Length: 342
Ligand code: SF4
Picture 1 (cartoon, helix red, strand yellow):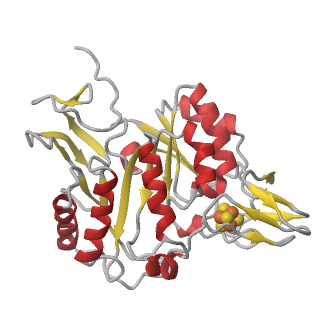
Picture 2: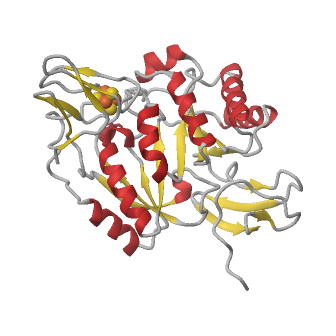
Picture 3: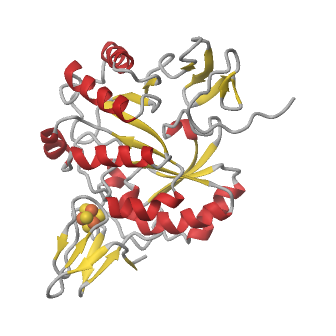
């Protein structure tokens, strides 16, 4: 559904400037922004994808991935088409790279915000996740759903590239409970050439949300020859440790996809090294995702006991009680549901 956008300024003539993400597109009349899903029509900026829910699933929260936020709960996960990045290795390019008037009609999938929230409640989800594509570019719908979700006692989770503006963050902040943010590179050139974005706004988003007590975990998809050098991984980990050493870092295995389909998957050795680099840089919780049989469990940083044993996205054992290690009582950072009393 077409709906007037939030967060834009009118320019001279019939131009507008969108201030939702850090591209800050100046859009002439009848043209689209870089994301391809926001259009200037006669000096009014419209979202073309309001409520156009092209994917919805009930996922384990571990799939986002969030490992320290209500572990073991289900999250009602939704996406509308579009993205403000153009990552050549995008794992969800079929929906993220849809553009208005090309691959899809955006009028086919409308789902009112109340229906999304009611479906999440009916399926006993603890949260709604805005995910798969880039939630920033369906911001207005995320905001409406988030408000209703809160009224029903549900949490709101963003899975995002972190490229929104401070203005957008201020609007969504009161309703955002947790986020998984991609930190893809530590090179401006790589962000620009490989994704069509930039590094600094992403760093600022991570720091802003953490400072404002949103629970944040960060993912780096480790892509061969793009960001897998020890030097770059060390820079990423050092930055994150400087923001908050308790912030979990997920180093995720790349599999060939989209325009980067001739490469090999990331080797497990490189992922193991990345995880060691993260710990040496001071991060207390480093996870390796998309591998089989290792890398995803949580240990107490003090007594080293295994606290959460995961297999894939599922929890096989949880020894965190009231947010603390059940062995030595060290507080474990995150948001943990109270354990049922025996
Ligand atoms: S969301 Fe970003 S890419 Fe899309 S129109 Fe606005 S500023 Fe441009």
